[in-house]
Length: 121
Image (cartoon, rainbow, N blue to C red):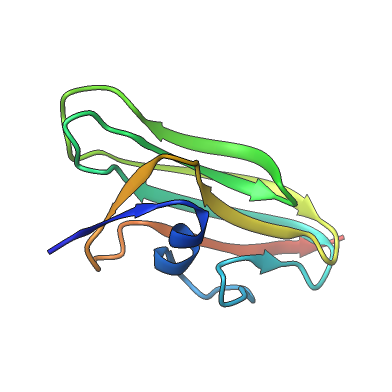
């Protein structure tokens, strides 16, 4: 049995977080030290006849990069993206599912968000 995820609150509740740096229970990483960080995220499309998946990496409400799957006839696509970004203490980084979009979730941890500190600045 599977479920569809929709909306930012759902993505924060359901996305699998690999604990490599201090994330909050909502899935948001808040930098405790200034430095250069690496983040990676992945998503599995919604398995609908017409794909409708858009997931973005966000920093302090600014969209940094996204993964899209919104066309085509296949139904088993995954996408991922990554970014190396400077953060100052207090900056927040998280993954956001765009409004009215879906990703597939069945407990197999297809949708991930992870990251780590490369070096302090």
